[in-house]
Structures are given as C-alpha cells and as structure tokens.
Length: 351
Ligand code: XIL
Image 1: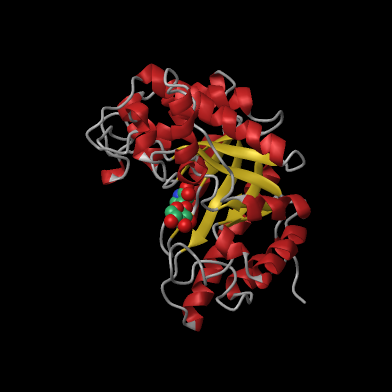
Image 2: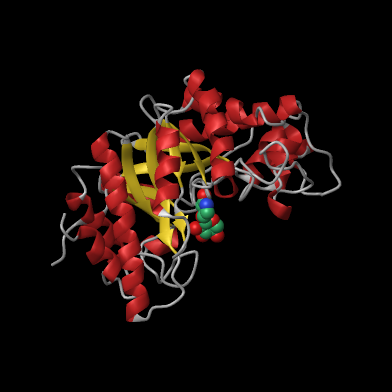
C-alpha cells in the first residue's frame, strides 16, 4: 500500500487533480482521487462552452425580446464531478469564468446569433452578459451544491499574449484563430478588471479569486502578468496567481520557476500550481526516471519556497493518469493502469 500524496504534503499545501467527467467514471480513477487528493478541478465542465445553455438563452430572449443581457446557464456537464466532490468532501477549484478559448462565438453576437455575419454586441451589452453569466452560475452552484466549498475560481484565464504590442491578446473575428480574443474585440482590455469585480460580487464569501496562465515562468510574459496582478491587487480584486505549470523535460528551468514564483508572491498573493504536468513522449525506464528526477526537483523547490514563507497553497496535477492526459504521452504521476510511476515515488521520497 503506497503513501497518500495529500497526507505526505499536508504540512505544506493541498494536493489537487483535474478530472473530466469521463476520466472520473472508472472506479480506479475514483479510488486514486480519494486516496491522493483533497482538491478537484473540473477539467472542462465549468468552462463557458459547457455552462452556457444555448437553448435556454434563446428561450429567455424570445420571452424577453428587450433583454439580451441575461445568458442562461446549466451545470449538467459537471454533475458527476460536483456530486463526487460533495459526497467526499473535496474542495473545488472553479475553472474558468472568462477565457477566449472554449467559449462560443455566439455569446458575443447580437441576439446570440450563430451566423458569423451577425455583428458583435456593444461593450455595454457584453459587460452585462459577463456579469449575468457570473451571477447566474454562482446562484445555480450555491442552490445546487450548498455544501461544496469552492476554494477558488480562475476568474480570468490566459489573457496575456507576450507577442503583441500591448501584451494582451489580439481582438479578432472568432475565438480560436491564433489565440485571438473576442473579449478584447467586444470589451477591450478592461474586461479583466470587470471580470474580477463581478466575481468578487457574486462568488461565495471566502472564495479566492485567481488569475491563471501558462508560460507564466517566462520573463516577458511574467512581466505583463505581474502588471495585471498589481493593478488588480491595488483594488483588492485578486487573491491568487495560478501558475499552470505545463512543463517539458527541459523547459522551464527550476530557476525560471523560482524567479516567477517570487515575483508574483511579492505582490502579497497566494500561489498555486494549477495544471502541473511534465511532458514525456517516451516511457522507457530511463526516460521515466529522468521525469521523476525533474518532478522531484520541482517539488523540492516548491517546499523550500513554502518553508521560506512564500504562500503556496496547492499543487494540482492536470489529469489522473497517463491514460487520459490531454497531452498524450506520459506526463503524469500514474500510468495507464492506474499504477504509481517513478515520478510518484520520487516526490514522496524522503518526505
Ligand atoms: C484542456 C483540457 O484538458 C482538454 O480536455 C481540452 O480539450 C482543452 O483544454 N490550459 C487550461 C486548461 O487552462 O483549461 C486546458 O485544459 C489546458 C491548458
């Protein structure tokens, strides 16, 4: 019987895992989560394309032709995950409210049209849609799952593009081409502050508001992120920085990670590693051992920073086993047969 990750790391931080509804379904997945993790992130099921209810939104508009600012939501896709969290006392990381990806283009168009020649709504209408989306979702969650603790919400995900002149994603004619953002198209860069303002208003008391991003360890990108966080923090609108931590075998360096973590923490923010995985295309013994060494170096650094007083509160793996990772290959702590890999053994060693 192997050691429980959540027990091993409990002196330092929570251990979390992302799961989709389908990854959760097999009994061995449930067993692994219950044994090793005390925090759960729905992998897709609380993203706007899962939550926005097109039919109900159109029905609402037909009954209220003067109000195109009240998008309707449902949480059916997340049901098995949230039932599981409720029944087993797992705290949930809500992921994610405002993102350019996995958000339908019709959300941004006049009358929620699915016709690509229909114009975007005005900034004013789009901000009301954003507010009511957040309000309706929070009310539904509170009503359906009054006992589930949402530890945090990723309020805005992946807003920064270090390759543009402003550091913000480019506006565009859809939400997918080259990472363009329809939030930038319809609202402009103050969509970020508005999202946090509404999230603060409607999330349950005590729920921590996070900004979440990838390549968060890179110098240019982290400078842009830092500035966004600083502006939000000055207004008390943000509580945490989500460092996604999608790593490869040679990038980033531990030093880059450390520098970025210290930079974000210097704002007085809580930090979480929200989507940790380390890509590994090979499952040769020596390659899995090299991956294990890298996981160990990272976890050692996280613990050192925590002991020094940097407020790291969770490490969340982005997936349960290599069987279902979004990356393919062998990036996680457990293999296709739900067995602990060298990476698992390396991180508990000496703890
Ligand atoms: C990924 C999911 O894991 C996939 O199932 C989905 O097809 C695409 O999105 N950054 C994020 C996550 O914030 O939401 C992404 O999740 C991975 C990258």
